[in-house]
Image 1 (cartoon, rainbow, N blue to C red):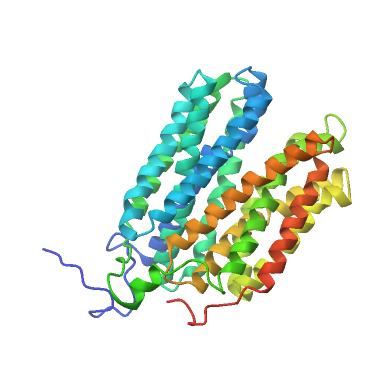
Image 2: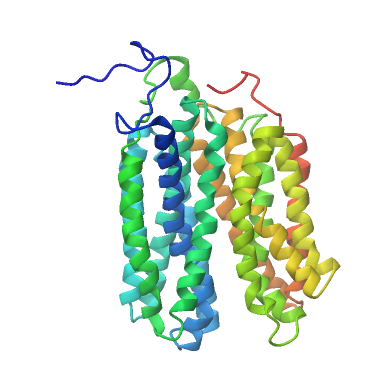
Length: 417
């Protein structure tokens, strides 16, 4: 019978790969990062943001009206917030191992059920459940792999997980466009479901193979893992991240509307701005992961907020093609960077909080996302334009810069383990 040698003992000089004994350690790291990235492709690209390119087609098909479509999107955001809050409770390694594959399966099955749904009311319920599962996975998959990488001194690679979001945006856009003339109504979700199901299964299998550290039972480490989330070091990071949620949701939700306000009929950016933003998100994960590793996550966050704020301001400062294109490029290439840099810096400030801290940040981010469209609706009701609502985003990102400036570079306790 083969027995497993405890980590740190025996003749081996380095840590075990933590996945499949005998597998090359370099390949193990790649598989771990890829598994989490695929999870985000499933829940965020195919589960959540596929709704953006499918929305005008579903309205054209008469599946629901535009006001109903906005309501459906709101319920999905509410579900995302609820899922992130649920993940705050499910933060121990054992709870993550149980909840993560279930949430992945629920999300993919909801996407399948949407393809079979003929009722707009049922569809709304499915989008709510989809959002809950999305929130759980978006917290737990990156947090699980971040901890796994940190034990091996490779936390700097964790930002690459978010490449899965950009890949998911492009995949869902391509599937929607390729099937636009072939499918009708709820059937338009079939390509998303057929892609999501096998990807979710593979991702869950590989993530479950990861060896995670046991939760501390006694002593200082156990106390630290249940310490309060908000302290003098972490509070500014939380406040800054609230600005990030409000700042990014306006352009990522309403950029096509602003493009229609500012650009002539038939201009390619009226429908192409979303594709440009998706392409930018592919660059974002690699770029900000590298900048954070080289110059420090806090310093990179300051630059990230400033560049993203300029992108949101672009349609206000330079209305027309230049402003819309700059917004798509700058926001697309930064908003995921804000997420990965904040999550990683949070672990530096409170290294023993793990998924609990990550979940709290995502819940705050989700709450801020709900505020943005609500404020935009109030402004539009007063006769304002969608372009003008971008000032809210600019102000929110300046708020993020201000609070990041007073966020410490690291915990007083030193570097994370």
